[in-house]
Length: 389
Image (cartoon, rainbow, N blue to C red; front, side):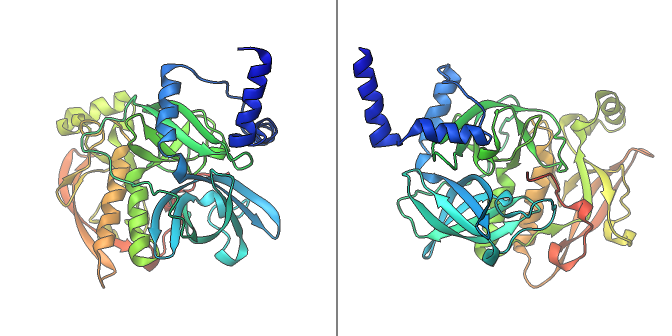
């Protein structure tokens, strides 16, 4: 093809489909989007195919306070309810700078929703939860934006090493973005034991966007960190949406216990543990790190260092079932969200936990109280507190 023909072709595509892509993309790159050359590998082409199937549902959101820009990130259309379309995104969008547990209210922040067709509409903050760093923004009904269903991953689903793609939309150019990588078995440095990790090389533009496998199953939504890309598991996100749809708020569970998966222990410690409790070799259990509260009766005598193997007969698996050691923590959170969702007028529910105590190699059953988060004062150390940036 001659240079003249190539130039006319490029001009045609810019004018009719992309607008002034050079200036838009340069502006985006100046903000925080790193240079990312065209990827014509099989993984890169497969990633584009995955992302394109959702392109109409992926939007960009920009927040401002008193006319000053606050943040820009990605969102996904997840529901049409009444006269509203719901967009799932990150609480980063409305978090007050320099704070861990404070966000702007609906009437304090302006949100602009940028659609893939260069249109923009005003959005309204409907829900913000800093515990899981997610938010819902609503716009007037947009049936042209198809919803993305958020379903649990199949039982026995293997995440370890699975190729995935992170989805975003740039807030300046409104261009669809994709970065591919792999799930990794590693503990995040951020202050949340439920986070999964992948190697997709994203920028802050992707925050709040989806992470999917190449079979178009959604793993969760992404956040930004220096070492690897953190992901809040879809099991947690979908239940938060379910709570909000029914209660117009999140009924968050408070167990007042923090822990991590058994298989995140160093191998030498794990070997000693499994010699005394062989069943833990199959990826069972969560190690209790901290307990908050003054009444030991609330925790059935549980101590830091004990291992929770099951709740109400449901085994907490981390390797044998899911092949990813941190999914046991998200599995537990999803289970507790389901328990709180089922609560009616009562504010407390009792769970039966099968325990192992490495200190004396004993086994016992503990009866644990679970509260709605609003009905008990929990220390901030028992909330997820990774920086929202």
